[in-house]
Every structure is written in structure tokens, then in C-alpha cells.
Image (cartoon, rainbow, N blue to C red; front, side, top):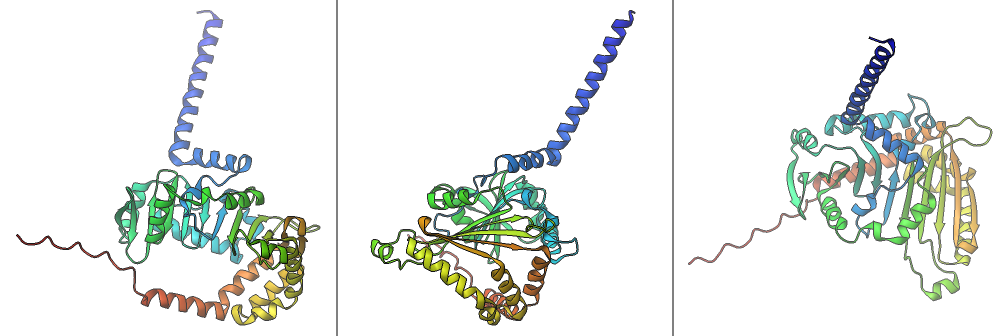
Length: 361
């Protein structure tokens, strides 16, 4: 056989082996979730957004935060043994053990409200149901969708392979209704605020504080208070420091130029006594740390835009100290115990009344 023919066959065989190996690698990547994780990580860096999560949040929600785990840099949160990273690992481990969901690998983005968490990523509803069956979760239905509920406590719904919802049962039902009706995705003000803060950061949030549309009288007199506050959180370091900690940027919206100017001056005056005013609520240690962060923050009024901007850098060691102070705060501990006691003794939602029996013939 000519040498050229043998060389061609050898080369062809190597090509088939390579393609077969590539196909097996791709199959394993898809089955194990690495392909989806890699694509989500790339998309997070190139085309960040809210992943359609707002469509599941009721339109009357007053606050929402979008968290992108792909943009969280652990080193910015301090050392491996620091309070911030230990807390994150503890939460990740607890959720994975209970539900089989890895917050660092399976979840690409979260939308968080006071009563509901909506996640995008890679989820297996059947495996989740089997895992939670041991924890007394049962199937229920609303609006043609199935979810898992532990009566009187909480509920979980795998809407599809890409979306997972968690909250109490009333919140899950409200989310199902919102997805087919009036959701936060249709609230242009909220969508614009989040987009203006930018999704190229680990956390972006917005909170409505008052009426969105002030009266003409309040605008003319400048008597309007803040309408909303939007916050962006990213890892970073101050000038001259090694990268670490978090940078906080906030925008407070008001209804007029006069209100923005007045609010800026008021915030600048009040931060001097912030630590003292917070001691009764948070404890001395936490109040002192928060006062230091407020003292170092930059406050700038923008009357033309009717808003006030705030910027602060929180070093990694300060972030650790804040978490530790919060965990040991006596006032916060007492407030938590009171809340838990209320949750345990307060009556749960009443079960719907049984339909009346048909009249006897």
C-alpha cells in the first residue's frame, strides 16, 4: 500500500478519535451541568441582565434585589476563615444538603424580595421533589402549576428546568399569578432603575420609599421626600489599597431639585451622630462600625436630576467585623427571638371552608 494512502488513513483515524473524544466530553459537560454553567458565566460577563426573573415577581413588590453569583469574587470578602465567607459556605452547604441545589454551581442569578426568591439556573424538579419528600413537603397546585409545600412553613416550585422559586405558600401562589399577569417586569420605573445601576456587579437592588408621582404642589414647594433608593454592590478596593472589600453606590430619588438639595444636606448632617442614634437598635459595636462607614462615605446632591448619590468603600476586614458584630448584637438577637416567637404562636392561614353538603332528597 502506498505510503501516502497509509498516512491519510492514519490521519483520518486520529480525526475520528478526536471527534469522538470531543463528543463524549461535550455529552458529559451537558449531563453534569458544566456546559450550562460555563455558558451562564460567559453570558454574565458579556450580556448581563435580570434573566427574566422579574416576570415572576408581583407588580406591587416594594423592593427587589438581583444577585449574580458569577460576579462574586470570594477573595474580596476576606480570608477563607473570615465571617463573610464562612457564612456563605454554611448557607451553600445547608441548601445543598436539604434540597440538592448548589447555590454556587446550579444557580446563575437570583431575584430576592422580602417574601420570595426566584432563581435561574439548572434544576431538576423530580429530584427536588424526591429529596424534599423526606422533609414532609407535599405536592399542591395553583393556576395549573405544581409546587411543593410544607403547610404553615414554606414552599418550593420548579417552574421549569431553568427557574426555581422559594417562599411561603402565599408568595408562590402570587408568583404564579404574576407570571401570567401584572408582574414587576411590566413596571417600567423598576426596570429602568435596575438597568441604570447596571447588572455588571454582584448585587443591584431598588426599594420604593414613597409615592412615585408627587403632586404639583409638593414639587413646587420642594416638600417631597425620597421616592426610591437604588443600590449597586461590587467587589473592589480603594485607591492605594489591595483589591478587597466591597464598593457601594446608591442613588436616592426625590421629587424636585429643592428636595434633592435638602436631603443631601440633611444626610451630611445626620451621619455625624449615626453611631449614637443606632446603639439602642444594633448595639454599640455594630453601631460604631456603621458610623465609621457613613463617616467615610461620599454624599453628592444632583439637583438637576432630583437625586442624591452616595458612595462608600467597605474593606474586607470591616465587612468581617460588621458580620461578627451583627451575630453578637444583643438587640438584634432579641428582635430575632421575638420574631421567631411570633411566627411560632401566630395562627397560620385558615384552611378554605369545605363546600356545603348537597340538600338531602
